[in-house]
Amino acid sequence: MSKHQNKGNRNRLIDGFGREHSYLRISVTDRCNLRCFYCMPHEGIEWLDKSKLLNFDEIERLARVFVSMGVEKIRLTGGEPLVRKELPRLVERLSAIEGLKYLSMTTNAMLLEQYAEAIAEAGITHLNISLDSLKPDRLEKITGRDCFDPVMKGIGKALAVGFPSIKLNVVMIAGVNEDELFDFIEFVKDKPVNVRFIEFMPFRNNDWNIERVLSYKEMLERIETRYSLSPLKAEPSAVAKDYALTGAKGTVSFVTSMSDSFCGSCNRLRLTSDGSIKSCLFYPAEVSLRDAIREGGSDKKIEDLIQYCLGKKPEAHPPAEEIAAAENRAMIEIGG
Ligand code: SAM
Ligand code: SF4
Image 1 (cartoon, rainbow, N blue to C red):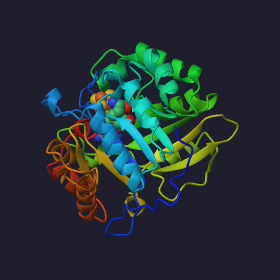
Image 2 (tube, helix red, strand yellow):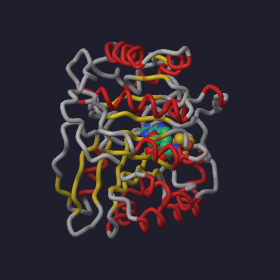
Image 3 (cartoon, rainbow, N blue to C red):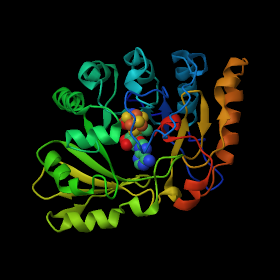
């Protein structure tokens, strides 16, 4: 990846509230090899026809346009990004983009044993791995698949490969896995891993209700009954509240989208696997960049559409109950 800064490349991704956008999350597929109940709606989703997905040329072209406008960090997500055929080739192409400083990925680790080395070599430096339980039976209930062994092997492989940053994403849900807070801390204590407890967010038919949200404050209080945590300094646009754990290699964070939203400093944009730009996870409006490309649109046309979408970005997302009642794509369709 180019270590060069985009010298003289002023960030042009500024919305109506003065927020600069330097982080793009690209979903490379809506398919997944797991069925986490909080992400995939009960009724399932209608998989996109392959022809509707952005191909690698289109993804690279859009990534270049975004980087030229000020994006410095790209995260590949999905669905499950590693089910997209030949993903390491895409990683290689993106990591060669001049001005891009970080290329990261979020994965469920099912295929990580197979791909960890290839994606590290191709340029992924920051890896987020999702794991909601350390109990095999419970993990199967949450994900709909018997997946504990491949996931743990994948995590082991990622640690052996030694990515500069490994984070463990745990969606904490009251009555589901809240009794594992301490187990997860024990799991990362002796590893160079940041465990991130994520508040449960509402999406279409995902069994969300406010009683099932375990807030960051509740989690922190419980953890502090047994461990000593000290706050770490955060970047202004950070979504997580980070803590060091006394005497441990691992660190602990909380992603507080529900109890303490970070809209005021949001620097994120999302590109869905079918090529639509979304300015906010919880705002249904989208603009198709894929259609513009396929109609022969110039880079200038793409930039104009991105600016149009940014111009519509809301100041903040609505309260949780309103989000739960609104029409939006499911998380698996958007890309988390
Ligand atoms: N399949 C990959 C994975 O699971 O890591 C990447 C896509 S997944 C949509 C990205 C992240 O979103 C995962 O860490 C997942 O736990 C999180 N996520 C999905 N639905 C969520 C919800 N309702 N509330 C909070 N986090 C959620
Ligand atoms: Fe698949 Fe990730 Fe959603 Fe689970 S959270 S269903 S692994 S996309």
